[in-house]
Amino acid sequence: MAPKDNHYPTAELQALDAAHHIHPFSDSAAMRARGARVITQADGVWLTDSEGNRILDGMAGLWCVNIGYGREELAEAAARQMRQLPFYNTFFMTTHPPAVALSAKLAEIAPGDLNRVFYAGSGSEANDTNIRLVRHYWHAMGKPEKRTIIARKNAYHGSTMGGASLGGMGAMHAQGGLPIPDIVHIDQPHWWAEGDDLSPEEFGRARARQLEEMIDRLGEGTVAAFIAEPIQGAGGVIIPPESYWPEISRICREREILLIADEVICGFGRTGHWFGSQHFGIDPDIMTIAKGLSSGYQPIGGSIIRESVAEVIEASGEFFHGYTYSSHPVAAAVALENIRILGEEGIIDRVREDTAPYMAQKWATLAEHPMVGEARMVGLMGALELTPDKAARAAFANEGTVGLMTRERCFANGLVMRHVGDKMIISPPLVITHEEIDRLIELAWQSLDEGMAQAKAEGAFTA
Ligand SMILES: *Cc1c(COP(=O)(O)O)cnc(C)c1O
Image 1 (cartoon, rainbow, N blue to C red):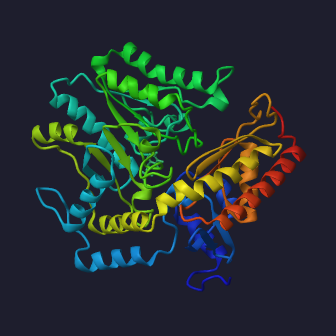
Image 2 (image 1 turned 30 degrees about the horizontal axis):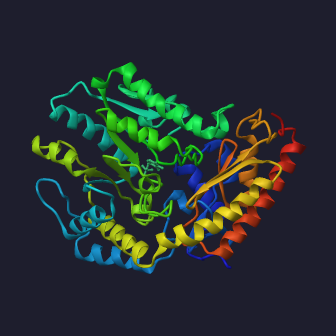
Image 3 (image 1 turned 45 degrees about the horizontal axis):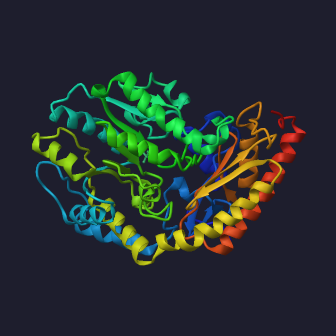
């Protein structure tokens, strides 16, 4: 395919980019040495770069383009709304039809009595809202000392001060003096890397019980909430053992704390259900949403809140909190159209009943690769654990080196598959076909071969 002619030559774009654009989560020196990758258009699951190369997007952008690229209906919904009412706020007792319609729709698809929505511009902002909201809730309940939020190491909850504090990424905490006060972290349920000699089920229960131990250590009267992703995404698609969520649920039921499920990745079909909580039988008080909510076509996030919790907030007077772009009409209109298509076209049902089982079967074959210690997947999110020694579940000596080599081979071969340390992770658009899955697996196998060969040649293939 010829490159689109509506942009400068690639080298010029790269030079201007390097001169004026600071990138999120990028090593600027490395990027300048090579030039940023320039993506110019996309369709379905395929990206096109500025040189006309087609790349299979195994990450759905950043876990968000659930519906796939190029849906005219979403562009139309945005254009229609921009013409009619491009912006109005929902502060000071005002609303508009897209905010009303989206809220009613979210209440309909969210489980149980999760019936009220507070909007943000992103998942990070929504989690900042959650911090203020749960503390304000306990204050209104006459228990202002219940402030501490328990989260998990290696969780990802966003990049704002609050979101990054809830997250358990050491490298993020090291920059900027995080976490903020009254946020603590327990260990993650990552059996492959941390389970030692325990069975996955024993390990899952043990990790869940850390929540109970932490509540006891801090004193139940000081704990506001526990927050967790049903499946950790950015941490490396860490799928908890089956014993984990039932035990967490028991603890949250028995103790007086709120449970926040961060559904930013797991929501909107990723696991083959509307929400990851439904996959695991979790009964949260609050769900954080973003990403797949609009399939990334517009920036929008939010918190879906249990009615009984919202009523306490509502009865306590004005909640002094809001973003200019809370319930932005264009973003809301696009999200609503996205949800309509996900539902009416049966995309989520197809993931659950057809695509995910097919993908899981193909993905499992990658575990036969000599460098892959585990191939795990739920719905359409999965990971490979790269290892120099499968039997020992050994880590590479120089963590992340082989993962990076393999990711670079993937890009060169026309596949976006990210690496987190030495885990390779995948989260394709939910509209991926069997044929495209076959291609993805072929490209992944080839890239694993090449990554392993390079690791061996460069002496990096050691425990
Ligand atoms: C991406 C992500 C966020 C942050 O969302 P942004 O829209 O990037 O602010 C929060 N939680 C989880 C689980 C995420 O994956």
